[in-house]
Length: 353
Image 1: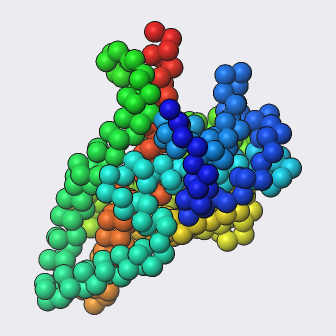
Image 2: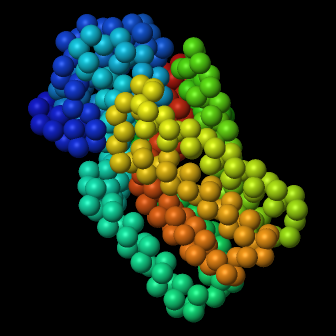
Image 3: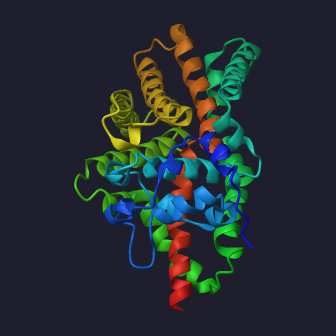
């Protein structure tokens, strides 16, 4: 039996949203949202759950991940209840519930803890560099090993357990009866949404530029990850790999510059309310592309030995990105969205079966 929790609004406000109580259930948001249909009153259903503090229903729902914050619901709301921002806050809250370590919730709620974590990682990089007597080749070798190790460890220790918790909350606990073959049939939805962000394209019916930016950014980011980790971009002599890395880092920098500009100018609905996690995600991704570009440029121009600080800065940003933002910050939304589409497909196929 579900229990009403009137204090839930206080908890949720720590993740961003505090205006949803202004909703008087007029239905304008549902009328304008492309996710709403005869069976699903979206986003009004989730507003009601949040108002009553029905945490189990919220944890069982995949709908917050289906929303790409086009902002139409918030624009049409006569009470400024900001349903779009509520969906964003619910995604942060759900991320904290999926995370078995509890660190996601801590970083979302506490600025001081986040700053402390970033400072400690910076100090650790400096200590590591000093232990190698600031030898650039040794530092770059360790940096490459660090990338490969962290990818494996974050996947194994953080993401797989968290995705299992997400599966438990949304499939197992609600008692969705899905035959094992359905999981394989639905896999295509996982990869389609992961690499193309197709749901965003469907949502942005008036202007697909935002979808195109996200699509290019996802491809550029994943490609640069492959290029630096598996093709060893900083040490390769392959002209093709070198040029590929330049192009990938350039696209990451240009697109994230536009994202940062949009957040500063607040010229889109999703940029009206920016939390710390939003800023860290776009700024650190921008810095990742920029510093990687300059490290390789300094290598190619033969001045990297006299400018070791460039690699130190890049390694610091890389470590902060890999140890905080990727496993516990907004980067996880990319992963959880993709699996939400996958689990949603499983649910629909199970019902049809």
